[in-house]
Image (cartoon, rainbow over all chains, first blue to last red; front, side):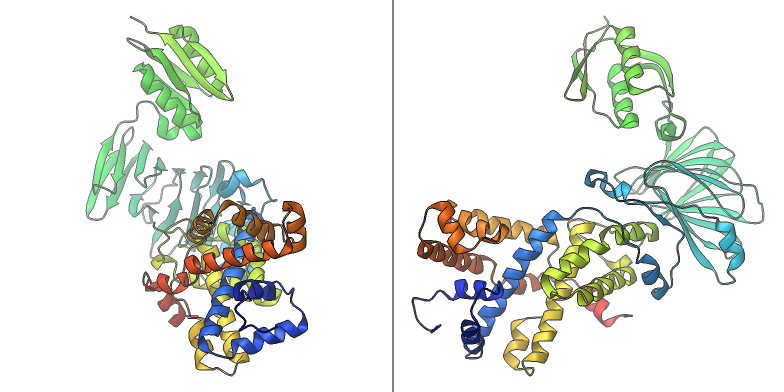
Length: 329
Length: 187
């Protein structure tokens, strides 16, 4: 094969070369062609990358989620440790949440076994999970949340890093402050109960159930007392007092929503967020408001109650609900 | 987009989830499972050690695949240099990438290039690429002569090369600093 021949399409020949479809003789012809000049080698390399990328891309498009065991090997080489158990592989649409689950071997065992400080990580991916810390504080992690801390606690404070939503019941210890780091903010307490919620746009809401906490963000500080909430707005660099009358920020833990003369639009918005559904409103909504407590109700029951209270019609189509009404005068 | 690689628990999830896939992916490039594993392990090490400085344009998965692809190409480049007595030409031809395309970005580029091909040409090319069909099989399936298939393939490849050919080089312009640092860094 003479590759200098104008009738020969070099791209096509190289493609077959990379696919290993050429005869020995033709392969050699390509190899010597490559050595004839930098231009040829350049062309060869470009096409090789392109060929590999097509293979790589075909593979990439077929990738699904799997779980691997070689973490320990990697972790020891990189001086991190973890106490995490692998989950079985799950269907792809569960994506992020699903692949690993988790924990809870005892932080205590490690705490006592190790003389070296050790980073401990606890995570919950598929459901909520309660974990306890060496100081007996309890943390309920929402789906997808994780915390990590160094054991034993250092510098006379109980410092944990949080990602995701969690509910804390911090055991009282006036000597050792309990500090939560989340989304660039710091929550400092001595002993109390509070929720931390991180919304998609990275703003953080801390809702206090008992006691007092100090929330710090950059050089902003705010003391928040029981019954109140503070929102860290990272976009505007502000700490805002929040009143969550509906109980939306704590719904994931207690499955409770409170509506008090709340407009139907707001009710539906809250329900959509809480239950992670997409209920649509249709028809008239004038004057329609609700006063009700949904305590651990299923979404079906919630819809039934709304529909019978406000005389709305429930339309279900392809797994999506629509509430249709004629207003409430 | 700020990465979550620096969150240890998140990193662990990603590691467990993507390690085997990335090895399989790397194998497409390096065709050796030990090397594929090493490459992926090294990418994770770099990501872990530089987690706080990384900036992702697409998403974590796409970033990891892009980083592995880049590491594979670098590996092939080094291998090429060794084999060919480190000639100046081959050293330049596989320019080492400090910044890289994230996989979704590459996918978009390639899909766009394919979209620009005439219908028939694209069809022939994809039968060859995706279904790994021989020219004779494609010719039979589409009721064309083998010569026509060959010509169409050649034109498709040429067009793609023109569009994609030097995307590696162009991309260097957008280079980010971190990967340079990662290479100089702790590993």
